Length: 140
Image (cartoon, rainbow, N blue to C red; front, top):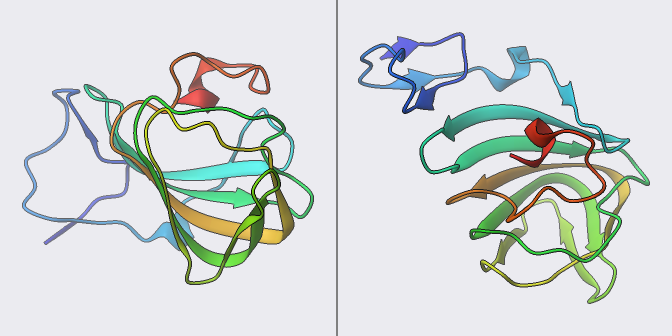
């Protein structure tokens, strides 16, 4: 097994040949997104398809402000906290697995306490950049 200090990305041509990759997520810094109170640790991304795996942290009171849909399937596993989709009452707490199918409109959402989820997309996140992000990187 090879320990890799960077973020593995497929399709870039610069990725070393590795049989296995091990990241210590605790050693990666949180990257603040342009939506206040939301940050991420990108664990893996396929640049060709847009698929990704990331840790997402929502500070208490932060969340997604409007209904929206995704360009691929969204999966989340809640590690800690309490995160609610307010239009439906669907609430993630530690140990909950959430699947939102491609194209399904959901949201808004709010973190009732600091929440950390593992978020997986099997393709690109959004069909177009949502208005709450001020840059394209935050919507990838």
